Length: 296
Image 1 (cartoon, rainbow, N blue to C red):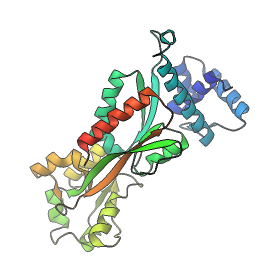
Image 2: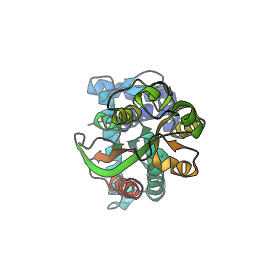
Image 3: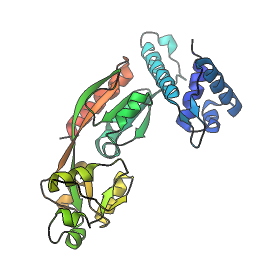
């Protein structure tokens, strides 16, 4: 049988990023945390933590963290039929989820905020590109994810949410400077673009659709949804902006579409572990309802 005090220490190290901060969160000494993790590693026969800045979980460590999260969810479900299991100091369940930055900045945050206000949960949100959040689900790092992949990860269910619509947009001054002769492969090759991070393929996908071929794009990298919008307003570059965030700016003329009406829809899905849990199911219902009210 697994030692759940040791599992809690492991999860705290991975969540907090260091043994010292994990000790503070658990109200024990760093040496106690280190000993619990070491004994757990000896028991399972492999390393569970990659010591570094920050500390990260190995593949097996991620699986154990996911197991602990599921067990805690089931324990909270038991409180409904075993009230003696609940108490005034009952710990809130932690729900690790992954979501893309643009969803978090627009429709996702209000949904999970409403759920967290009504349920005894603490959300542990990881931000990643929508094409890569499912990898965190497969690794066991999270129990649910907003992803662009329809095929469910092993042991998970997948539900369509709708499509997040993006538009290629820039400031009027930027348009006048770089696209006075129109939007083409030639002008796009010289106009600075905005890239959220190195995983971001939206600009390249839009250009291939418009030009029928790939174009090497000069780019600025800005890993912030709000910063991405502000950079576009400031004339730093053009980029694929989420319509939910920039619709008022387009209406006021502060941003202009490069090619009017040439949006790009990114279908999104809610994938979650099949392990039954009323808290996880409740979060899923809140996410689906919010998405269907906001997405295309």
